Length: 397
Length: 148
Image (cartoon, rainbow over all chains, first blue to last red; front, side, top):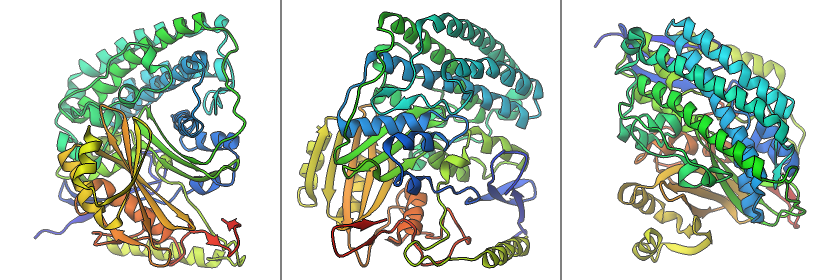
């Protein structure tokens, strides 16, 4: 049996902006096994949520993900509204949907750019990120911030999108549509992109079902699931659109699904904007005074797939338990299938193909025992512990 | 329709059922029946495992296993209550890849033991954390007050 070499990607590596460690066990050029280590970025969000009021939790969960920052507040709002049993106004529904879909557009543009970057196709990277900017500017106009929009609250949204802002949004949408044509051409008609991504990182339908993968990762393997259609929330039942799927399950199919989804997002927003024109301005909130006991399960379709929140209320003004499942949590596990058997150079794009978000996947940290006040680990112990881990890694090689 | 069939098949194992709406159903089940019911849901009926939420209450350790019946929007929660002193339940990870990480996470945060799990190492803080400390466990005083 030949000797396997350990190729580490991470914990801090320019491939991904977030800390993570992939251990690729390789035989020559071929990846034989992949192990994933996390824990570099715990923030204790699930525990923190138990100490914040329902209003504050929105700001907390918004900071789970820096890219799709509205997907967690969206799922949290639907779960709390399920406990209360409240129906929000149509105008709030349209605004929520517009925010969600604009975010899908800029998140997909970010991914397309990164995919190009990983393949050495930097023209695609620069184009995609250039045309992502107008969408972020639009967010600044709507919410006052390019990211972390703070738009959601229990019972509706915090800010209205006034009708006078609609033409500016429509203008950006027509630009996005035009530039999506450009990107589709740059991806679909490029022989190098085809050569680097077709048949690479393939996930079969069965793999998706086994790992319970979600979102574009699942849809690219022919698993036709989308929370927006299957369990409609916000304004999705009020608009027309279709779920994009592909069959091949490789990186190319994932790119194709994401690119074509951007057209659908534009189409959804256009319908929501005409819906907004018919609703009364300012009617964006239903007042909620008390959140009763019980639990709610809210799920929404984020750019990376289904975000799931479980909120348990004990009748007080903060959640008794808040469980968060980000789409990357199930999608990242598919690396075990998509990378093994590939060459090392294809591993990077296979890892990137699910659009992984590590910050979403990690949410914990504790250092002091609250009851006794004792430090569970002191600074010295943490440093020597950290050194021992590094040593362990080196020995492994 | 699917639920009626499920209730018929596992009439003894399903202890309680609550439907908040047509799309949100919770079944409290006997912890010993978790594996057969989950296998039936996944293999026969085509349910998708979403995630499991563990919580520590005065009743003991509770786990909600959330399943989605895609295409219909149904979320089915299987609710089990485990012993306060010795929380343990059979692992699902020998059958499904999808439950592997969350069982490790629940083991790490709550100290729930998943029997026959293929690899019950810490997930979020592998090698970076004191053993035997479970940050999500709560301490209950003898009176009604709950200290987190």
